Image (cartoon, rainbow, N blue to C red; front, top):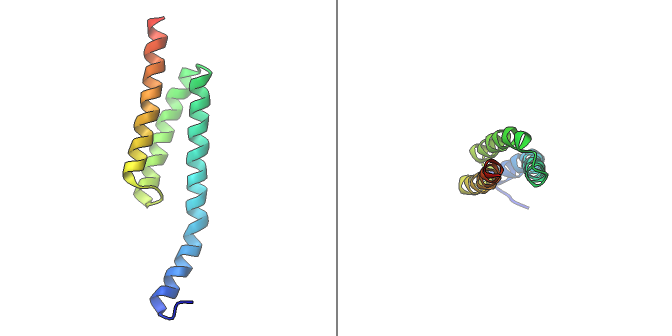
Length: 93
């Protein structure tokens, strides 16, 4: 158990933040899965609206420090790439 006052305060802060961060991470995973399912089922209109929401939530999580900003950028990039591939395939056929 820490002795210093600052260390004890940090533990209190961490205990408060942990459930909030877990909820944010869970929401990110859920939204990402919903987007991937929409892409898989060729629901491109729904996927377009979801990609905006997912990107917004990843940016918010990155700004809060829940995920690293590069991790957020990587996920957004990969999901956008998948959507764009499906959109170009749909336009060609």
